[in-house]
Length: 102
Image (cartoon, rainbow, N blue to C red; front, side):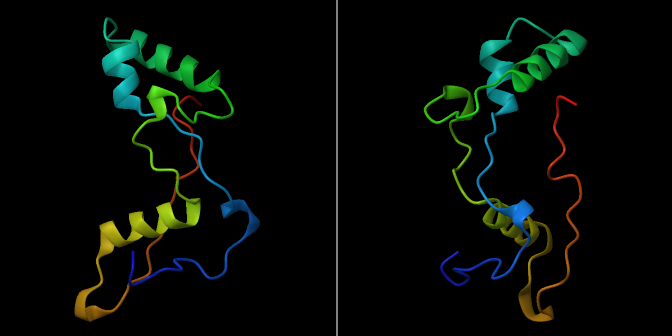
C-alpha cells in the first residue's frame, strides 16, 4: 500500500523471500478438469509436490503476485482486520506455511 510502504520493518529470517506457489483453481479447472473428489485432491497434491523450483512464466502460477512474504502476510492481516478508528489490532496468522499436499 502507498500509505504503508514498509509492512514489516523487522522480521525473522524465515519470512524472507517470495513464495513459489500455484493457483489451485487453475489446476482444478485446466490441468485436472476431468477429475473430481479424491482423485482431484491426489492429482493436485502430486502436482504441488513435484512442481518446478521456479514457476515464473508457468500458467499455473499466473495471478499469484510475486510479492515478498512479509507483504503478503501484511495484506492478509489488513484484509481480515481492517483498522479504522480503533487502531490496528494484533492479528495472529497460523498455518500460512502449511502445504496443501502434505
